[in-house]
Amino acid sequence: MTSKPFTIGVFDSGFGGLTVLRELLDLIPNARFTYLGDTARLPYGSKSRTTIARYAVSSTNFLLREGADLLVIACNTATALALNEIRAAAGFVPVLGVIEPGAHAAFAANPAGSVVVLATAATVQSNAYSRTLDLLGIRSTEKACPLLVPLVEEGWTAHPVTAEVARIYLTEALMKAPDATTLLLGCTHYPVLKPLLHTVLEQMHRPLHIIDSARATAEAVLARLPAVPPLAAEAQPLAVFATDSVEKFQQLGSRFLGHPLPLVTLVDLGG
Amino acid sequence: MTSKPFTIGVFDSGFGGLTVLRELLDLIPNARFTYLGDTARLPYGSKSRTTIARYAVSSTNFLLREGADLLVIACNTATALALNEIRAAAGFVPVLGVIEPGAHAAFAANPAGSVVVLATAATVQSNAYSRTLDLLGIRSTEKACPLLVPLVEEGWTAHPVTAEVARIYLTEALMKAPDATTLLLGCTHYPVLKPLLHTVLEQMHRPLHIIDSARATAEAVLARLPAVPPLAAEAQPLAVFATDSVEKFQQLGSRFLGHPLPLVTLVDLGG
Image (cartoon, rainbow over all chains, first blue to last red; front, side, top):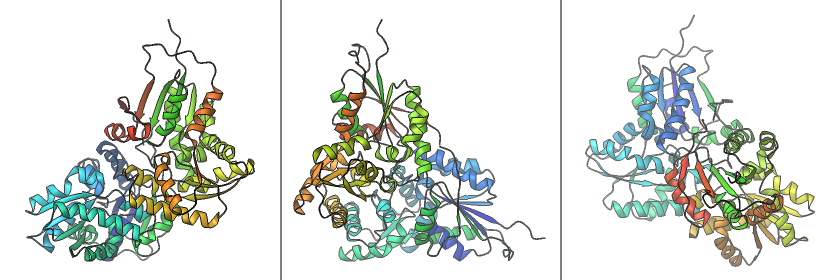
């Protein structure tokens, strides 16, 4: 008889967290993964702290019921505004967010640098990134980019309109941070925009180093893991749940995960 | 002793319905209004029928508990996907949506015309507009415009990026409907874009007649009303509720209502 596999629960308000899951699957092949996208209540990024915390706790409770031994909050907004509430709900199960790993990756890339953080309105209002970067001695400027998530969800990841919107946001941010060296993507939707952001920054003659927290988060999870035995041959390595339309999730999700998703299961968290 | 004032409950997923409330306040000064914006769960337009119906019914139940004698569903997506469910929940209280009045207004403007409908993805997928216009003998083409709501909420109502997005959507729609005469705004967020849409259509040399359903809906409500006695001097003519951040609602809402809102009350509908 094989023992229960070590299960990592990964949570996001929608698809974006699949960019983190992608790195986790690559780095930690022995674990079993359970992913939940709270698509019925997305986006979190434009909502209040109270509402975000309520949604995030009910979502992580679902992953705990599904047997998660460790939780990854693969959503910057939920990490920024609800990490304490989620940790309280999780008890002895360790909880890792994306903000600390992202901030450490920006520090590692350039310890003497100055960072511009692009994120949702709620993440920026929380100042979670600037507080974390401050502790590392890094200067930072945060910029809310409410249109980038809808543009990514429209599939306009290489579209001139998205480039123009990015140019407007980056110009505003760089006016406040003329000496910036590093661009930190503070939303798990944004990694699919990396090629476009590179091009726009080049056109602006501001070739910043672009960092996202997906790889850094996967590395932080690996560092926290006990020795995990290989999965049994018959074990399902990945189960994916969403709170709204699974067809849409199936379709859009593969763009973020980088390969096709297993069958997505609909789950009702109320509301 | 004065009798209970006649109360009209107005519901939207967010701010857009305030464009309908504005016309109702103007046309029906004797009624009392209760408005609910379900901002904790917006946007509805990108979600599934089941989820939209669940949210719409819990929202209208709130307005019924608040004493609504008539309900106005000032949200195209909820009207398109959940009108039957809402009517079942409302029992003897009459329920009016925005789609029939909008379609009739398009017909009245040009009975021999051909209509392009701009709306959310969910409204377009429901084909509610084309079915209603078909019954009136009007040809129509529906076009999903997922970026217009986020652009309006960003406040970019007269911005070159919004003009470019509108031009892209209109070009795609008009390729399928080269003989279109009328543009029907099938989302209550869009009336604030009317001046921009006029300019873009002029630049495209396609001066379509632009119709929104706000005024037509208010007129349909007036036609259904019993004789309503004037409000008592001490009566509150308008109460506004939202399910998320009332500060943001207060701030953004006045743009849609055309004048400042009364104090917005936070309400928790679960979820």
